[in-house]
Length: 109
Image 1: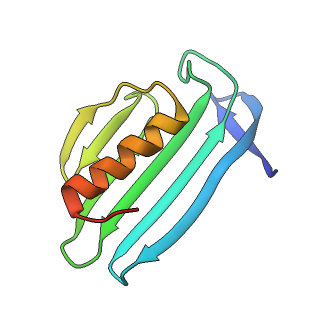
Image 2: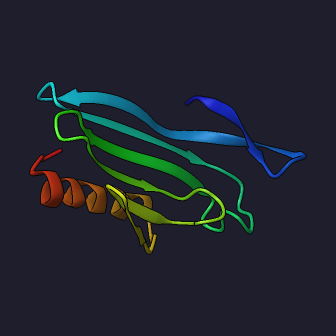
């Protein structure tokens, strides 16, 4: 498994374990990118995970993005709309992302 360095704050370096890094194109139209790291638990990342899940429709320029960067925490971008997301587990995050993509873009991942 790949180990990368992850900057947390301005002075602390923590080892991060890559959970997933995957990029694909579906139907020559949709770009899917999944990136997630298991990181040290902190005030900024109390669940000890940092992630970005993206689906982009090249034709319609629509996007779905789920991420948890500081200071916003867990949230969803549906095009220009931003919605709070209640994170529970990595597995549930993937299920929720797949459902958002299917419901909003009609694409089954």
